Image 1 (cartoon, rainbow, N blue to C red):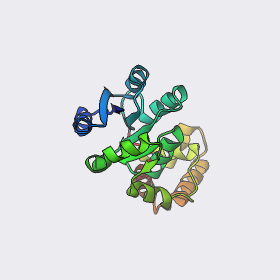
Image 2: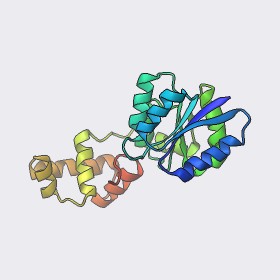
Image 3: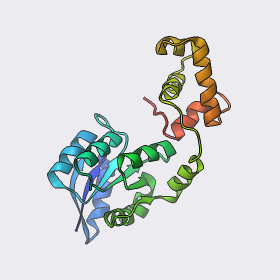
Image 4: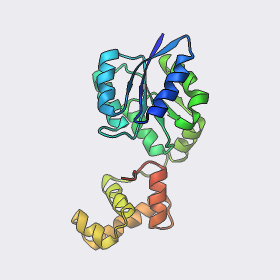
Length: 205
């Protein structure tokens, strides 16, 4: 039996997973968790074969939970379940140690096959995610400071306000904005924020 742990802050998603897994003779849902901290506790208690992990949750994010679980249990097999196909999110999840990445809209169609593949030692990315990942593989990544600036742009701050909040000159703030637009291939600040959200570089707070 493939023993599965489902981690998601939405009960309706966990119920859907439970129903799908429950129809299979070779797998069982051994535990559920609604945030990252609970996921770590349940993993320690049940040692599941495959963990299904949402990324955006209260208290502790999925990425932080994956990192923590993989440090303690390097053999842990984790599949990310998310509504976001952004390449930066995918990269972070894979770097943290996830072996699969599945969009929630494809659960019914691909979840069971993905669980079996990851349990068998394979890595699984859906076609849409793989394409998004490949499209930006050669792009220049934003620096941590540029990401901070992009977050402030998303919060509606002008260059002067960005400069004050980051304790830099207004000229420097303008330079960061220019670099961000160039790296993201954005036409303007609003476009840069849209791209940043779509690719998972920043999240709406």
